Image: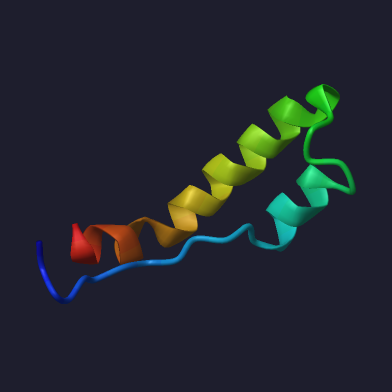
Length: 52
């Protein structure tokens, strides 16, 4: 196993946090959260690919 690792910490962005709302377990928001997460992925893809 490597001593060093390259990592990218991905946390919800502002739009994802809004989509998640106060209850992340609410099944009625799944679609909105998925859409927000996919939009965020387009913003961070280069950071992920740089270490992949």
